[in-house]
Length: 350
Image (cartoon, rainbow, N blue to C red; front, side, top):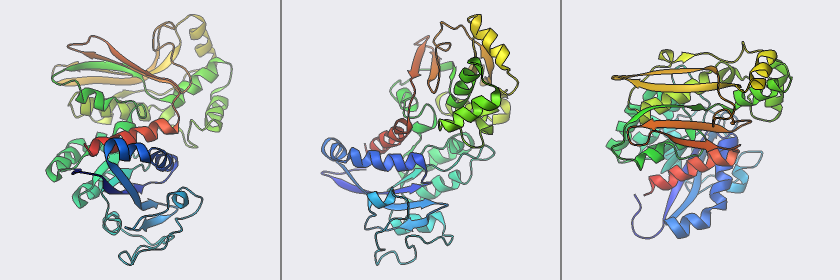
């Protein structure tokens, strides 16, 4: 926790693709505001990825070089002789965190639907090292939320994950501001890739053509299986259930159907009739358990879900106090996801 005055935190970035690179730029852009309004200063002391290897310098790395095409150019400090810029030899995450003297880990590696690894191990290592752990990876929430939550509490650190669902929209932190409220269920559209594909198919493209266009737009990955078959939406649904409804749920317990079987003709007909198809996530409390599903469904075109298009998202919560509490996110970019990580950083320092 921060004491009187301004404290400089050592930041480490594990997984250095678009999200963490954008976060570095956002942190630099907001550096004055973080210092003046929140009393937070920072230095980047660690970057790790498959391409760069394990890079650490407790004296600080050059942010411009960090975001450049190559490895950071700053020379290593005397205190960290084992980790050099550009070194691709395997080093454990624990050695790396120690060499970087990490205060905060930003974890943004790829999702592993099966067991959440290695992200779970990364976060566990950060908390045991004594660093706050902030992630954009949904896997650890679904597969190890309670363990990591309790470990963070025991170590006096924070485990935060606002960017895992709807980018940087404050969904999880919203419910932190709603004490003693009981969430009964929710429904929404949480996967933008399928939303884009369905929209393009309504406009006459084949499935393959629509997928290619989504990939060209940078919305879909080269391997978009997780999106197309509903895994991404199911993991997000499981994360919301696990955290907000406090009910552990296995992915196999969520009824899941993707969009592969939908045809352009069926989609055009549904849109013409005013009931377009959307990939809808649903969860409803039933006794002590929760019934959940992800599947293509027809929704009324004039309803909030029916109006969601392109990369926008929507979630509608049902609580015992507020019968309907909805959030719409319109066409977010990478900065929205990065902002969720930055906001979690500020929350961790409170």
